[in-house]
Length: 170
Image (cartoon, rainbow, N blue to C red; front, side, top):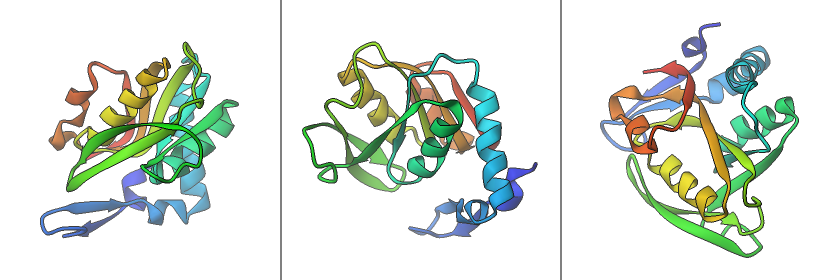
């Protein structure tokens, strides 16, 4: 399946010059959504994974169904102030701003093998922060899986040689 056919590109959103990759058009098509999750599963199924961590919010719609398909747990990584329990936090740069991410301090046990899943690898800021959070808790990151990679932004270069897979590259 050509997943690009299901991803809408919106120019000048959320700021002039940004060409936003809108996955809602893929998500609303059950067959395309299922195929995307199945394709990601095929790319990571041979890894030893205890948990999938997905950053807010589109990482939830990729990571949670992937976790179910792989039979592992899912850990949400949220924006600062959104989790009710004790958390650890890390700051990061977006492709068009700055923010902070948080994870429950008991979400990952030391030594657990974690796959990061998200919709998009752009500049690598969000994923670098996610890596930082997992490392703070002693998790072992086994890779990262993305629906989309914006290769022209070189985000992969910020991930320290992490094994990265993506279904679509722009």
